[in-house]
Image (cartoon, rainbow, N blue to C red; front, side, top):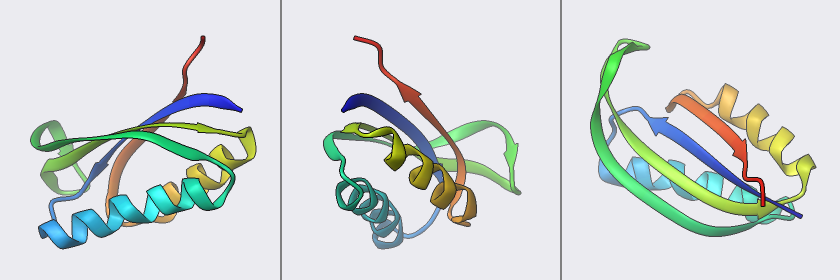
Length: 94
């Protein structure tokens, strides 16, 4: 198992809807053989440029341990989720 971190930006939604999106991806990691180590909610920030007609987004950083197959599924689901503006998955070298 390897350590990863994912940073994603959720489009500005109500607090409950934002929490639902974060929980969705937390459950996705846990259900596919991974373990979430830490979730940092950075909050709503102004974007450097307009993304999908939004000037603000809710930033989230998740540190987790997982097998590489989970990353493929996470990437696939992130791409088709409309509430995600941008995301980046990085493997942390030890």
